[in-house]
Image 1 (tube, helix red, strand yellow):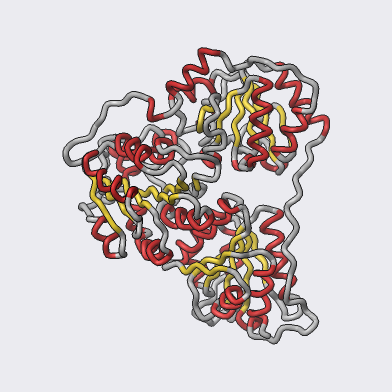
Image 2: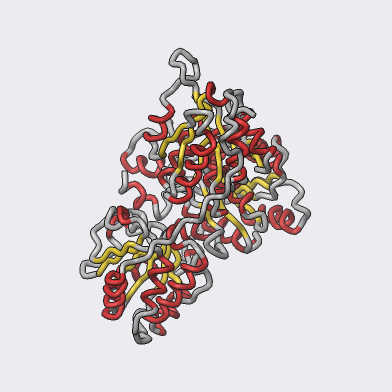
Length: 546
């Protein structure tokens, strides 16, 4: 057995059950070995798409996924998706063949590439240690929540595996939850007891059912209102005290209530510029607390009055175990009525800007929310449009929105939806894209059709890079570089085997209703010609961060 086969078998045995990629000469034997050992290989049409599919699958499945790429150019093609995963601390294993001869056309400094985008690098260095080095990379991805590039030199892959080296590995142990310090738990309990208007903001570190239940119970005791970062949207779905998303996507009422808090507790949440609107959601006298199992995350984006190192669920439950009284806090009857009536964006009145040629993106999104089944899993691309599907389409829980926005790259949304769909096959997958991102990733429409995914792809088509148009237009700058002639994206989709409909008015959505009611034997693309007269409400917030 060669090293490539031994490593592939060991990775599969170590629990890497899904591997995404594009196969070339350098990763052919490794990938085939994983498939032979039981892993599912998902072939993408571009390494960039494969990287984001693997990222999304890992996020939504809670397991370590793998990306497999050819040496050199295969890795560089994937680097944006790898950067997104690394910035999001996704447990992802990148398996890259490596040319070590500097005169090779495929030679690049692959370790430096990994470090440049925030991933960590490892290497298989010998036949004797190959399996252990590969399994160590899996453990590091899982336990440190890191994206790990495992370089596999071509010459090492072809060596005979050592007879003494194991070829089967046990799955790595689960990540151990970090216990909070007793004094920190007591301090947090005291802060909560003193608070009159507490707000909990839950982030990525709270995306488990156990953490949700613990936070809900603690919030009920202290009368706290509940919000999430965009990453954790849906965590408190259907809770009458949920404010939905905190930050640039917040509805006016949500922003008002968070600004009125005397205590904000970030639970597994960075409290960064997006979630706190560059700090403007924090009142001048508001106490800020952050709970995270990574000490380096505490206060990384803004000063906190109390930082608690600990797992979210463990910390919340230990605070619950401290003596305390039931309090009304922020949960008054008037506030409850206001949340029920006005916290959702679709309940905020607006002037419909639809015409006979263009549909208002708010009108489109509300209609789709009503038409599409409630049990859905969404991937959303980046762009001026992105707040509309993210906030106007409801999600049933925290495993329903896959938000690959840490790098703010367009073109990732379709691959995101594919990876999420494979992790959640029980739900209708929805990809929400702008026309720029849709055309940038169009090759993966083939992957959707080939996998037989009953996906709905919604393209918010304003024939432009809308974010740039609305950012630079007020300054009177020429916009020729960011505006484009109309493209019939529906026709493009039909070429890939999709059903497709062009939507200009609400009446055109009848075709979507028919598809939902029908057999859904082919995926559906909606080429929505949206009104683009002004920037989205969150756009001003976004560009403050540049």
